[in-house]
Amino acid sequence: MLLLMVSPICAAKILFLPINMDSHVLLFSHLAVDLAHLGHVTRVVAPSNARVPHFVEAEVDSGGNFSYTTYPAAADESYCNSRQFSAGVMRAALSQSSWEKFTVTTSVIQEMFDHLESDCVSLLNHGDLMQDIRNGGYQFAVMDPFIPQCYYAIPYSMGIPYATLSLPVVTGIYRVPRLPSFAPLFGFAYTDRKNFFQRLTTFLVEYLLLLQFENKTTTYVERLAPDRPLLNANQLIQRVRS
Image: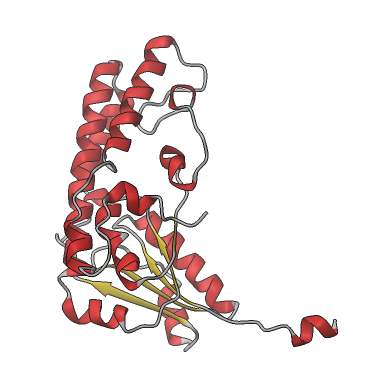
């Protein structure tokens, strides 16, 4: 007990950067609030058109260690909340054609990635907020595993370590081996008892998803950290803390 009493206990300043998806903003905010209750100083920075979790206002008004900041989003409505996104997901889920599932899912995901990247660019273009983040003295960041070439460039440019949200489709980010041909895939409603063609489809779609992270431009790293080594999206992912 005496050893525990004299052991140094330090709180950390932690930055949370969720993508423009309501469920992710909710999850990141919950985690940030819980860590703030444990004595850490936490801040969530989210797009302005994302739904603000119901508990955020009360937590901010309480004057604790938690804060929530928004930045102007690229559009009036989050793409993930749009009718277009919902229609694409439903079309893929209800289709009886594996080829249609494949083409619709990859199209929806590509469009989602384009919108998410536009949101990240909106954050980078918010000069006052970016300067405030840089001067915040953060020691750690919690990120989303999407658009790493842009979002991950922020903590990388600040020289701080970062972790990422765990998602089954990108287990390689946190170094967990996974064989996509045997695991169900988003949008396809397959079980773990797939036939050969379903396994092949799952493998190809996931491979295309992973290609989204490969060899992405170093433009954002060059912009935010011109004095540091230029890293592409895959290299930024490899720096994620387990």
